[in-house]
Structures are given as structure tokens and as C-alpha cells.
Amino acid sequence: MAEPTRLWHPFAAMGKVDGHELVLTRGEGSRVWDADGNEYLDATAGLWFANVGHGRAEIADAVGSQLTKLAAHHIFGDHANEPALALASRVAAMSPVPDAAVFFCSGGEELVLSRLSSRSGVMLTWPIFSAFSASSRSVTGS
Image 1 (cartoon, rainbow, N blue to C red):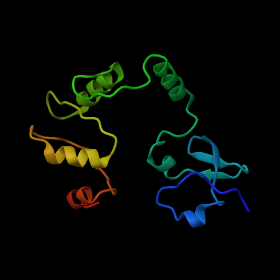
Image 2: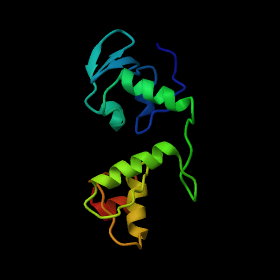
Image 3: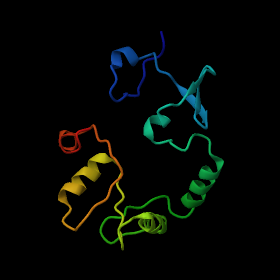
């Protein structure tokens, strides 16, 4: 019998997972490999966050360069950072709304709640999916 796991898996029946984990060790592009060398198609993009693929040297280099300057910092209140300002300008330039402003968030729930509480004109968004709260599901239907 395999060693019991100390990792709690979200949305999993832990009694079935314990000792039967699929341990992935590397990835290249849209492919991933497990600890036994079996290859899989990562059709979910690492569960939505690796949409540019795995093992992208140019992205790792850019991240490494940024980490030597400023790993991360919030943009709440009057705080900003150069990457956030540059990306907001780039995204705003693509908007059909003149003088657009960009609101960054980490998921659908934040976006839905921001849209509900927005009092300043139009808020354009890409299609969203937020399955983790009743309020989001009731507003978006997803």
C-alpha cells in the first residue's frame, strides 16, 4: 500500500485518492508526464492556468527577470507597479471604449461582485465562469 498523502485534494473523495495520486513531474507544451514516465495530454491546461503550455523558456526568463526586481505587490488603494500599469495600458488600448480603465482580478467571483457594485458607467468583460459561489451562479447563470 502506498504511503498516505498529506495533500488534501479539492473536490476529491479523499478515501479514494489517498495512496492513488497521479503525480505529474514535468510538462512540455500541452503534454505532461507522470512519475512513471507516462505521457498525457494536458487538456485542462493545468486546470485553467497553464493556457500557454508548460516549459516555455521565454516565459520563465521573463518571470525570473521580474522576480529579481519585484516578486509581486498588490494594487489596492493608491499602490501600483510597473508591470500592472503597462498591462493595463495595453489592454485599455484594445478596448472599444474611449479612455478605458482596466480592473484586474483573480477570478470570476471578484469580477461578478465588482460588476454588481460598479457605479461608474459601463464595465466590459470577457465571458466569465464562476462556479464557486451561489451569488455568481445566480447572476451569470454558469
